[in-house]
Length: 170
Image (cartoon, rainbow, N blue to C red; front, side, top):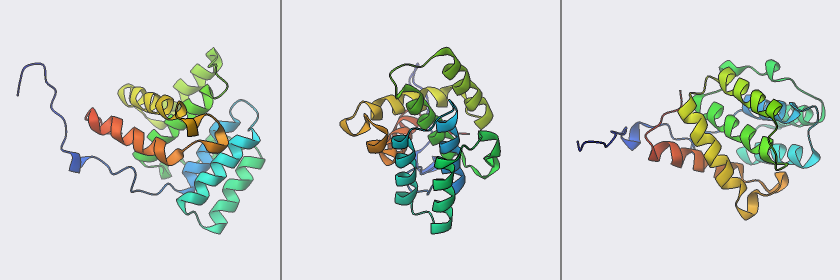
């Protein structure tokens, strides 16, 4: 190996983020993240429900997610043990995007994001890549509003960044 080059894991040993389906708990966590500032914007709620529907959640699970977008859900109520490393990384990236949606991330939001990352057990390097992926997707024409935000593209972009840099979500 050349000096200064970092070895990376073979691509077939990294988790296939875009092929795994997100479960109900992931969307409940996303709703809870959206409610963190006390309100969940209608466009944000629509985006969460749309993404859950596109992910193929059952009618019963979709109804639970829809309810969580109408009635505040606290992140503590989400069973984080049911979340895979892929889901945790994706949720952190979504939280970054939601925090930036209004064009400003205030100190309280920064603290909340730090606490979320800790709660999800996401290492700093993975947080950096998740944050960069969220910003890249948000800057796309389809990413400028909650109703049009491309959650699938975010998942793919998170995967691309982690794979490129040989980082595996824990």
